[in-house]
Length: 213
Image (cartoon, rainbow, N blue to C red; front, side, top):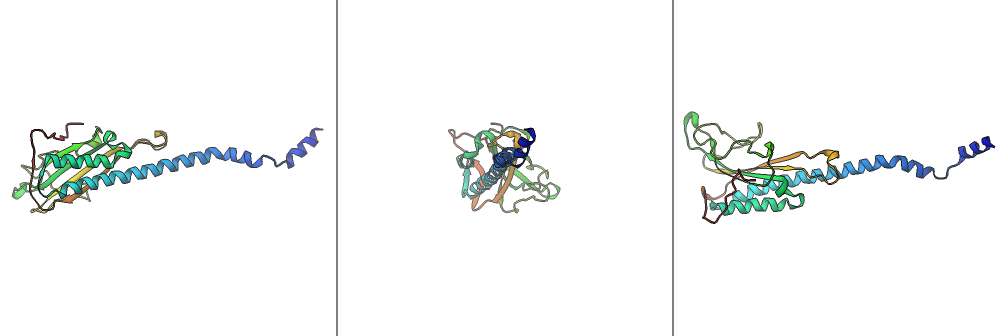
């Protein structure tokens, strides 16, 4: 009796596809989840780049003069671009206005005239990487902004707005897959048709200082 049953099992094919699918399902599911998380990370990275470029460009476009209200609008705009990735709670924008320090000889260089920030991310990576407001004003400690090999500085007759944007990635599936890395992007634009780089303000205008998170 037993040999007959074994022979029947040997040629039995019913349920074979279902059994193979059951074995393959965990691997297919893992690959699917990794693919979804990787795509989401790519979209978040693109959005961070977009926030940096938009913030720097909008701040550089303000003509004639610039005020604290103008800068606040730019910062709010950057957070609005990042609403879908919860940027206001998980990100940080740093805007620096950079121009020549007006000194000569060995002290000639650039200076950060003003610096404003927005966003709740408070980690070492979200701090100003190239200096805080006032750096380079009295010496040559600031020659350019940016990472080595990708540094940029304005000409002696112009100014530039430099944006540093950081964001702690928010997983769509689980932090177990790719973690929660800090994404970073930088962008700069030369100021167009602005006569004064000094920020004007009014008593009712809040100042987006970089000490506030």
